[in-house]
Amino acid sequence: QIVSDLDGTTPSPDWLKKSLTAVGVKPRNLLVDVTNFVLFELGQPLHAFDKDKIVGTIQIRHAKQGETLQLLNEQNISLQGDELVIADDAGVIALAGIMGGLRTAVTDDTKNVVIESAFFKQLAIAGKARRFGLHTDASQRFERGVDFELPKLALDRAVSLLAQFGNGKVGQITLVENV
Image 1: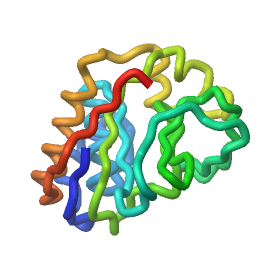
Image 2: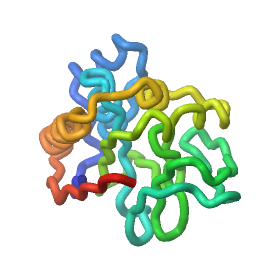
Image 3: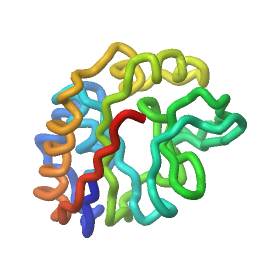
């Protein structure tokens, strides 16, 4: 779902920062804090992409062998072709269910975001994080299975928080099924 015209300089509310700190997560900025908060509140991983850094349209597909991705942790990975990825017209922007890419990362200057809330089958994610030496909250949850009904609830919660505290304008929802 798209949320636009955010004020990235708006700090997260104190209650949200305290909630994240209580579970061992360092608050960063409103966008990251909201996605992390919803993860711990509801158990549903979310990802925020900077919409203005996305080239063309977003697709969910299998990687092409040899495609590369620079992850949020600045690690460069070479994909083998059996990984589920999120891509735009310029290439891979996230390793689905595991970690996003640096090219479309949100910053304090981000004004427009695409919030991804997904249900990934366990077998599509299983073993892929370990392949690249990664261990993320998202991969841990998706490998064990998340409730099929949770993505919509979590998306609504995150978008509501961003609209309330970041003064964002809520846009359209795009639903992709059976990839």
